[in-house]
Image (cartoon, rainbow, N blue to C red; front, side, top):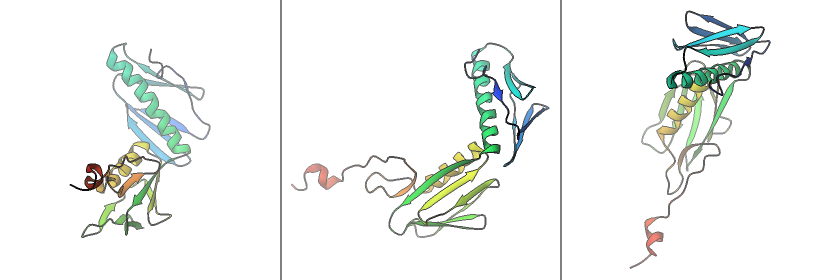
Length: 183
């Protein structure tokens, strides 16, 4: 069996999990999430414990077994604690602000960049150069954070751009410095 997939998941008291027609529904204090199960995966719930099972021992089924257990744990953590990603904006005059369901960013382009915030995601700007993305769906938070980062990824010469907090950007030496600065 899959090392990850065979582990039993303990369901917290404030979380309800239901499986109907191949879809798992997870409800907790922060909200509700749902995910369609693969046809080759089944879920058993007994006495506050959840067990993910697979149909056969093929390589694909083994990988799906561990994957769906991990996805269900992420759903449980999301509806109980929630998830967060932090981004920082580096550059002179670069800033961001949230207005309604839009994220407005000034990134040195000839026009402001506006991104619509999807439902279920909350973006805060504690500082004009810092973004905090919160929500209960880990996959959606990662997708939104990556889309924001792709607007102006960090460049290797000055380090300007949008990056995840704690992300290390390897800087390159400029052309004049690399050759010795002269003829």
